[in-house]
Structure formats: structure tokens, C-alpha cells
Length: 386
Image (cartoon, rainbow, N blue to C red):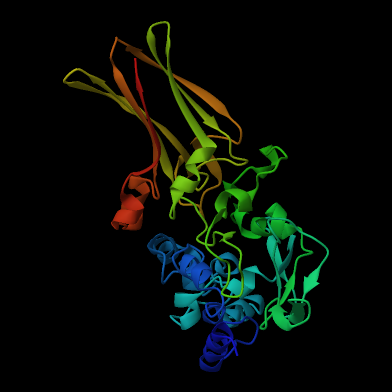
């Protein structure tokens, strides 16, 4: 028996399957590289026990006192007991169990998303009933085929080799896994109880093309997808974003510098199919610095943000009923920023587009001080000499 199959059976013997979703640790037996990426991703860290920002918001949310963790469908859908309590309108609060800590959004949950049901306040994922039939894309594309484990003849019938997975069936027919539509159950928009869209990617602004959620946030990188595969690449399962490997997203943003009427002009072009920094807690900044000989000229940054409010004052997302201010970078938008700074010969200009996971002012209100949430992070930096 192949060593990889023995490893898989070992994990199965140690970890009993949950009532609805197979443990992601079982997936590790055949997909060690993908599991390692997943384990460092925000999907694995989405619960209040793993994400300090989400926990800080939840501690102040009024639904906490009412025993209604309505965040579960997107932040911990693999916790079936919590989800069932929520559906039954019973007390539904996340407990510090293994699912919350190790796989709040597990591998088998995402790979069983059959369709996305549109909603008024948020979309909803429809989960396929077969527990060990998983949707996937083949080479980044969908096709009308279902692969079950079987033996194939090799070397003109002198030997046989296994094809497919000995643990689960692979269904390549779901187009959502090549188009990226399986992501929009949780990543399209969210409205609060006042009907205010507190977070929206504005996907309706997108242009149809070859790029989508998967091609940008789950690009092909080196390494076999499983111990049973001879392919040299796999789809990245760390889910590149502001928390994890943002450099994979930097290619969607272009920064250029030019001299316009003798003064500095910076142009920002967003090639992404959605709004950048859409989350209301984010603060992004365009920072410009000019090195002129031994002198360093710093220019006031340009802020990109959304301020939610109630009664004309800034408010948290759950109480807000309006948008007080907004300066966002929309999908496929090109913005020119003229600066009243004359450029001189040999000026060296550094332009940086970066962000705070949590706007420093909001971080103070939420009691957040961890460096990952409150430090300025660089998305893209370019340098020009005139």
C-alpha cells in the first residue's frame, strides 16, 4: 500500500468525522502543502478565538448580550452545533472548541459550496448534501466530469495505478470554482439591521474578463496539490489579502509619477475587479516622500477610508445608519493626485500605498494594540528620479 495512503488512513483513525464536515486535519494526509497554507490563512483564523480584530468587535456587539452570534455563517460555518442553534433561534455563542480554534471555516465546508443564494442583507452559501464529494476546478477551469477513485492500466497493461482520490469524489462541474462565484456568499456585501451596506466590494462595477477572486487571491504557485499528484503547481490556499501575502495582490495596483506643469503628479490605477480597502475598519494611505540632496521632504498622506455614522457622528457598523464620509478606490478606477510641490532635477521620489488593518482611531475604541492590526503595512512602493 502506498505510504501516502497509509498516512491518510492513520489520520482518519485518529480523527472522527464530524456530523457534517470532515476534519481539515484529515485533508492534511494527502494535501500537506495546501493544509500548511490554509493553516496560516484568515479562513483558519476567522473565529473570535483566532482573530483579535473580530473578537474586539464581537465583545462590543449588542448581539453578544442576546446570545446571538450572527457572524457564524461566514466566520465559523464549520461549527455545525453553533449553526444549528442559530437556525433554531436558540442561544448561539461560540465555544472555545477545536473547530473554533482549528478550522472555523474548514476545507470540506468551502469545497461543498454548491451555490450562492442572493440575500437582502448578505448572501448565503448552499452546501451540497454529499459529505465526501468535493467541488474543484481542473486546471483553473470547470468541466462536466466527476472523478471517482479507480485503477488505470499503465505500461501497456503491465501495471495499474490509481487515479483520483481514495478518500473522496472530485466534481469538476461546478463553474463557481473557476469563476470565483463560490466566494461571494461571504465576500460580496453585508448590510446591518438598518439596511445600511457597511461593507461592499461593489462587484457590479467589475468588468468581465479572465480575472476573478480565484485567479487573484488563489493564484497558481509551485508545489504539488497532493501527495498523489505529479503536477508541479497548485492553487494557493493561503488566500492572499491584506493579512496574508499582500505582495501577490500588488500587481493589481499601478503607481506612476510624472511632472505636470513643473509640479509633482502621482497616478494610482486600480486594475482589480472590486473596491480596494472596502472594510469600514480599514485606513489606507498614499504616502509621498522626496529626497532632495540631504533634505527629505515629507508630504501629507492621502487617506482612503469609509466613515460610518449615526446622528451625524462616527459610529460602529452595527449602529450606523449612514455613511458620513467616503474616499475609496473603486474597481478599475484611475485617480490623479496633483501635489503643490515643484520638482527639481535629481529629486528622488518614493511613493508608497499602504494600509492599517484597523484605522488607528477605531483601534483605540476597540482596545486593540497588537502590531498586526495597528501597524502601517506596505502594499506597493515605487521610486522615481527626475
